[in-house]
Length: 123
Image (tube, rainbow, N blue to C red; front, top):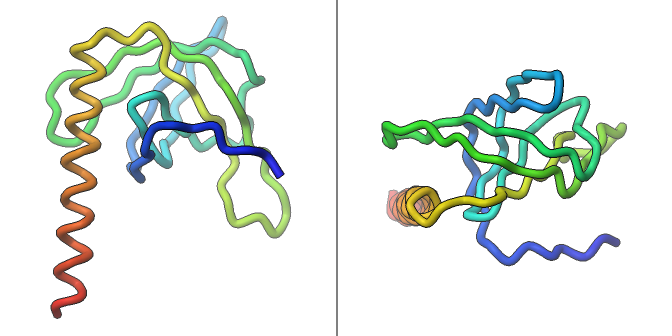
């Protein structure tokens, strides 16, 4: 069993993520996001250690995010495995302003999820 070393809360979020490597430009969907990184779904995840440039937007935030990252782990497609294949990408060299925008989005998204859960129990 692999030890989970993540320290930041991950929030489920499905957004289009464009990423660039040396010689490639790809577009995939995310599965979740944290202040430290993002999981990008891919049937052909990049090798661990690959550096990427990520470009994505978040709902209700007008500015694009343009970040550098590195693939820290990958999940290959396997028969009878419910988890989607892809790669965990850690954000690198992120400035304070960008970090705050992501944290604010995550906090808002988490509050909305809690509020929606509470409402569904009342109905």
